[in-house]
Length: 143
Image 1 (cartoon, rainbow, N blue to C red):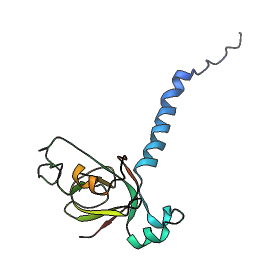
Image 2 (image 1 turned 90 degrees about the vertical axis):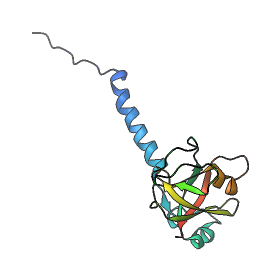
Image 3 (image 1 turned 30 degrees about the vertical axis):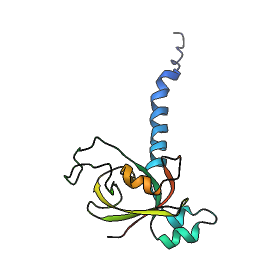
Image 4 (image 1 turned 45 degrees about the vertical axis):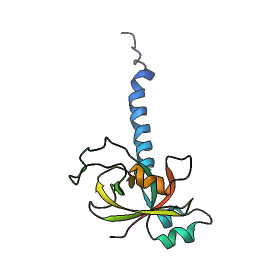
C-alpha cells in the first residue's frame, strides 16, 4: 500500500485566524486607556501628574441631533456633554488637551468605548487647529 501524503494547508485557510489575531491586537491597542504615570512622555510628566487624571485619547462624535443618549436626553451637538466608557453617567469630567493646555468641563450623558467622546461644541473649545483627535489628553472626574 503506497504512503499517502498529508494535504497541504492553503493560505486561504490560515487567513481568518491571522485576521482575527490582528484585529484583537489592534482593538487592544486602541481601547485600553492607561494612567498618566504609566504613559509619561519626556517633559510632560509633571503636567500629567499635576492633572491627576486618566491619560487617554479624546475625540468627538456627532450622531443626528435629537437622537436619544444613554441617559434618556436628546443629543445636542452644541452642548457641553460627552460619552464615556470610563466614567459613570451623570458625572462631570474635565478633558485637557496637553498640546494646547486648554480644558473643558463636560457632563457624561452617554456611553462610548473611548475614554472621552465629546460633542462637537465641546471639542472645538480644546482642539488643536487642523486636528480631529486629541492624542495627548488627560481626563479626570471633577463631580
